[in-house]
Image (cartoon, rainbow, N blue to C red; front, top):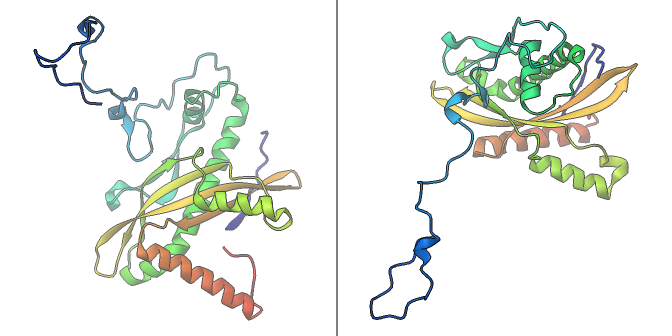
Length: 261
């Protein structure tokens, strides 16, 4: 888990078979009450209109104001340092503009968000994403050294209402040993799918889980903790996490302990 201070102030059933002519029949004519099937049930969300790499609408406006908006928010987008997609020609991921951020927030039902706070929220969003990618690069370093190629971020999804197994475990430990493990749950969770290259140039998709925690403020400024690790989806990920854990234990045994990052 890495500690990240943010040094910018934030104002913050199948149908039954027909009965036999000989068999006894129910006296009620069920055909009067049965509606003809209109085909399989459909999801109310038009997934063709969602970007599968972000789970957000393709047409999320970058310039249109939301109803009742009073302030003019910037519409310019900022480039990240995170490579996008599976080809170099795809460039890097772009962060949302403050106007896009407000549009997305209102779309999710948070209509009372102060408009003046949105630019600072975008700064925090971008800052945390850069921190998360920096941690992923630490996990990916040995594979980068082997292949000579940097990983790329294929897609991501937010799962704020689905606590990770580790977050649930830490909350349980906190209820038993509050002095050592007590603390608030993560305020957000993301799953990022990263494209990794091996030494033969083959590609592999690796899922990372990121838990976002709020830390104590320092001189009025917020701080954050990011818990970034590969998901237990493959033998490589299990091995990588075991290696990091054993390295931490060994360093502590030698008196070189410190905060695990």
